[in-house]
Image 1 (cartoon, rainbow, N blue to C red):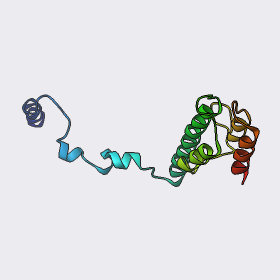
Image 2 (cartoon, rainbow, N blue to C red):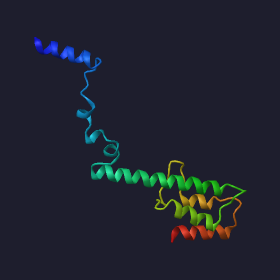
Image 3 (tube, rainbow, N blue to C red):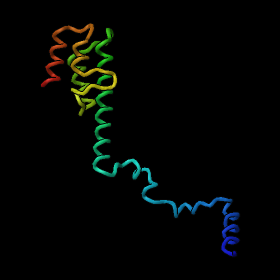
Image 4 (cartoon, one colour):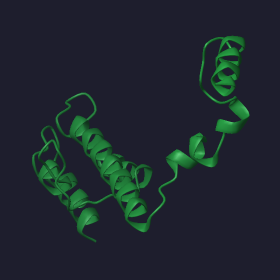
Length: 125
C-alpha cells in the first residue's frame, strides 16, 4: 500500500536510481587499496611469485637485447647491472620466451669468449 507509494516518490526524487546513497555504499572492500592487497597467504604467495616472474622476464629481455646486438654487445658490467637492477630474479627459471639466463649468455654473438665465461661465472656463483 502506502509503503510502495513512498518508495516510488523517493525513487522519483532521487532521479530514478534505486542505489543507496554513496555514504552507505562506501566500505573497505570498495577501496582500491583493499582490492589490491592480497588477503590470504596463498594470494600473497601468488602475488609475490608473479612479481618475481615479471622481473625475471624483463631482465631476460634486456639481456637478450645485449646478447644479439652488435652496437651494444654484452659485457661483464652490463650483466652485473642487469642482475642488480632487476634483483631478485629467478635465474634458473625458464620464462615465456623460452630461455634461461645461462642459455642466452651462451648464445651471445659479437662477444668474446672470455666475456661469456665471466658472465657465466657471475651467474653460477
